[in-house]
Length: 232
Image (tube, rainbow, N blue to C red; front, side, top):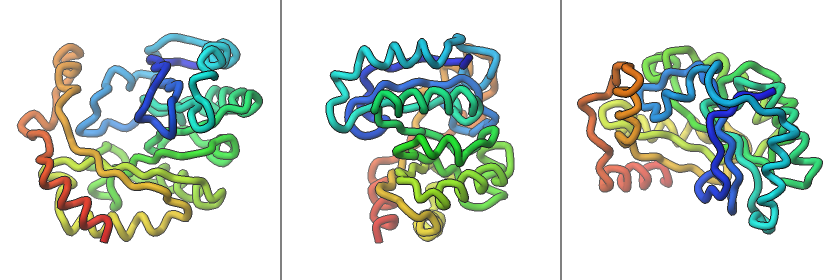
C-alpha cells in the first residue's frame, strides 16, 4: 500500500514525452525553497495499492506513444521504497517507460529500484556537506549512497539544480557544480531551475515559517549567464 499526494495524467515537463506523473507523499528534506510542504508528512495523502495505480496508468497508455510513460515524483518516492519497487515492476511488466524524479534521499533499496528505472531525474541540492545541510537540514550521506548506486548501474541521468539568489547563484559555485556533474557516469541533460515564490501561500495556510521570505525570484539574465558558465 502506498501513500500518494496527487496524480497528473498528461504531464509534459516530467521526463520525455507525455507522462503519467505520480506525486508520492513523504519527504525528510526540509529545503529552504520547497514549494510542496504539503507532501512532507508521510501520514498524509491517499492510500492506494500498486495494482490499482497501474490500472489507472493503463488507461492513458495510448497517449504515451513511443517516448512517454510513467514518472514517480514527490515529495520523495524513495521514502516508500517497497511500494515504488512494486509499482515500477508492474510498469515494466506492461512495457511502460519509467522515470524516477528524486533528490536521492530515501530509505534505501536503491539498486533494486534502479533496475526497473529507465531514467533518473536527479535534483542536486548542493555539492558540499555544509551548504547541503544549510539548504536541506540534513547531511549528504544518503545522497552519496544513491549517487553510488546510480553510477554503479550506469543509469541515464537528467540533472537539475535550483538557483536561489544569494544561496546558489554564485558563478564560482556553478563552475564547481559543472565539475561535480562530471563525477556521474551517464548524464544526458543538465537544467538550472530558477527559484520562484509560487509555494509561499501554502506555508501561510499551513502556518509554517517561510525562510526565504525576502528573496525575490531569480532574474532571467542571471540564469542565462549561469547557464553559459555551466556549458563551458
